[in-house]
Image (cartoon, rainbow, N blue to C red; front, side, top):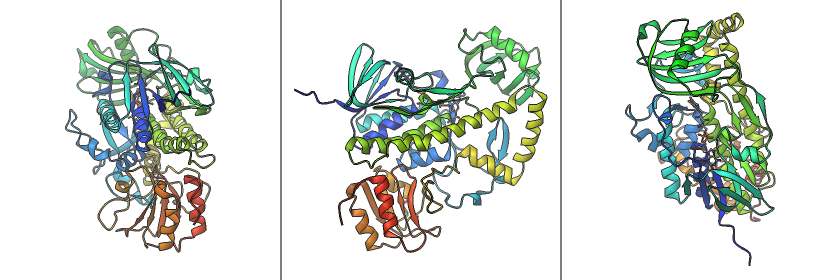
Length: 506
Ligand SMILES: Cc1cc2nc3c(=O)[nH]c(=O)nc-3n(C[C@H](O)[C@H](O)[C@H](O)COP(=O)(O)OP(=O)(O)OC[C@H]3O[C@@H](n4cnc5c(N)ncnc54)[C@H](O)[C@@H]3O)c2cc1C
């Protein structure tokens, strides 16, 4: 007798990307098992001061659309909960440590963005984020098995058999969310190419005998770069071609030697409380899918944490992949839907990798890099410059190339405040597509009905329509079709079929 496949999807890795993807797949009704190598999810490296992560606008929007944002804003953290970064005369972000300021940014550059809960950057502690996502996933019925690292797998035409911790698991699909040194990527034969490390980066919590020898803030020096925040948090970059990273234990003596070299001082360390190293190695998978095996997050792309975009990139992968994989497994996906995951997300990752490389170019201890730094400082201080850097750092300019159409197509849907005071994002919690119709047109309603539960029809006016009459939003919140004037029903039907598959005949 044929054995039924016990899980629709196995996810390797219970990091933020694996957990968020598990929630997305479960929301779509799939059975999901997460296998995590580490027996204990807690780590001092995931807590303050090292574990702080900046969430970009697409991430806060995704969390808003899944009702995770309010939970996060309420989560207790050591300094009183997650903090909204958007305040007056506050730094809005940085490029290689060179700040731009919020009040210099021209927000009118993004006409389809409405102020609201999801429109800003948010800082969270990694451990809080993972705990929240794990709790959500468990409450939804995702199985999470810790202490079981994926060691191998084989795939057939129908399923994938995964070996982990001496046990065997079977599922229809396997997604590697197992981080930068991904076993799934390595065993799956995914191409992985890019540029090698120029430096070893250090983040350390130290005690200093003579802290006044270091001045607070970020400093480019003849030896590299260091950032010092009182009382004793240090980040450093040492241009050693990445030779030290993971080659030997990080000792007090070594950190002191590097700090002395890059700072050009004779500062003395009396204790090393915590330290981690990283590099600027920037590599990208050549494909995100091999048969029934997929990659997402750091498993698919690695780069230096400069500019803090890796987590956001990975969560964006999960939001993009979840509904497409679910439709593929249900059997109602239109042709090419799953391939569009790679087509849309690979260019975004390539851009992020280049953004991190550009920052490395500015950080090198060379006269040409200092000259470049001076130019960037000038540019970032202008309104156009600050706006450009904000667009890149916050990822507000993100647009998938969905092939022309209205200027909103391929962009994140504006978070309209509807006539009943709800926001559009709140109407997206089911994970279905959504057709928002400001004019309650019976023809659009009839059209939507043909896709059954796959598209929710919402007829409601909005406080600010932004010149629109109707729009079709994919489950990930990106706009598939929009109309300013009288809706073109044929165009709307084409867009719905392209993203939601075959419909019942009218
Ligand atoms: C110092 C530093 C600062 C950063 N700051 C930012 C920031 O401000 N903003 C930002 O967006 N990003 C930032 N990043 C990057 C961000 O932390 C990562 O991009 C993000 O954690 C990637 O998430 P992930 O789930 O893909 O991988 P991970 O977080 O690495 O999770 C992978 C999980 O898979 C598990 N695993 C590994 N191998 C296996 C296996 N064989 N089987 C099963 N499980 C396995 C691991 O134990 C882990 O739990 C920073 C990174 C560093 C190092």
